[in-house]
Image 1 (cartoon, rainbow, N blue to C red):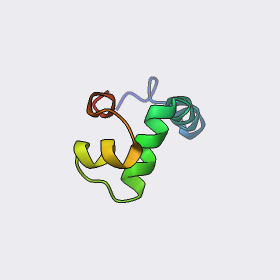
Image 2 (cartoon, rainbow, N blue to C red; image 1 turned 120 degrees about the vertical axis):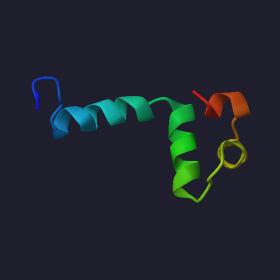
Image 3 (tube, one colour; image 1 turned 180 degrees about the vertical axis):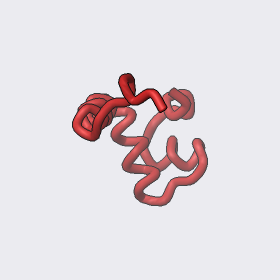
Length: 55
């Protein structure tokens, strides 16, 4: 297995934090953590337009 391009735990953490710095992504993530299961539920719970939940 080629592990040269696999990020280590610290790099993955940085990438995740970078993604969650986007407010829409953070709100969608929080909605899932609170139990939203479908894109419609995520949009409603997060207060986002349905199109925003798809990106």
